[in-house]
Amino acid sequence: MGKRLFDIITDTSCDMPVEYLQEHDVAVVKLGFNMDNVNYEGESGESIDAKTFYDKLRAGSMPTTYQVTAEQAKPYFEKSLENGRDVLVVAFSSGLSGTAGSFVVAARELSEKYPNRKIRVVDSLCASMGQGLFLDYVIKKADEGASIEEVTEYAEDLKLHICHHFTVDDLFHLKRGGRVSTATAVVGSMLKIKPVMHVDNAGKLVAIGKAMGRKKSLHTLVENLLSTMDMDENDPIFISHGDCMDDVEYVKRLLLEKLPNVKIYVNYVGPVIGAHSGVGTLAIFNKGINR
Image (cartoon, rainbow, N blue to C red):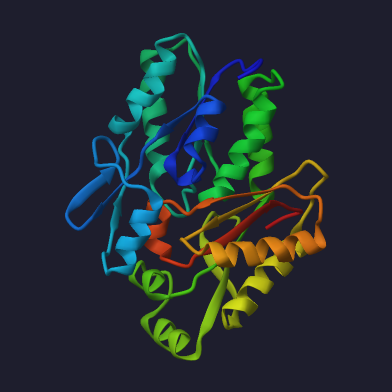
């Protein structure tokens, strides 16, 4: 934790490995979902690993997510506040979830109970390991010994420079979640058209193109990353995936051909986002000029 002057909290939509979060002393609010009439994660749900989750999706399970409430978030914040620590919260995009709104309500109510403590909520406008990459930069800034005000300002300036490049292998889950129309999903599946998407400045997942076939969609993601990148030699690229490691390795090869020294970190798209994107989702994230 180094010189950090305050505590950092995020939520499970950042899709960062548990080991990373523990190593960097980041508390995590667990967001929940229901699958096959079983509540998972959340406040008191069952645990499930990502591989098992995607195996269930392949078998036909259809998960639904539910929003964390302010009351559920408060204990995570209070653990720090009771110990005399200020809190910076990095929240899942408000363009995709009500999580940030619940965190803001929790922070406002707790500020009355702990008037001498600072609670700052940053709506990341990011998702999956885009939120994770954003969090990584925030942690590094905090560990330089910057104040909570300085880190909050840094985070607000940075967030629209975290670029998200997504594709999915099957449009069904996006259709089910209202992200694409039924007609688009049917025609896309018949013609093997793959959407190319990003997260825009409002933190919403939007289609910005399409590709004929899976390989072309993966190439397009890499091309889009290269066209937006604003990185120095220490800036990493993050990749998250819906249980499609062969495609991850293919994308890594494409990236390393162009950026041979870049550090690439990989993890699953977690269940909260995977419930809406499905098996075969692949996303790459970088620091960029703009989205």
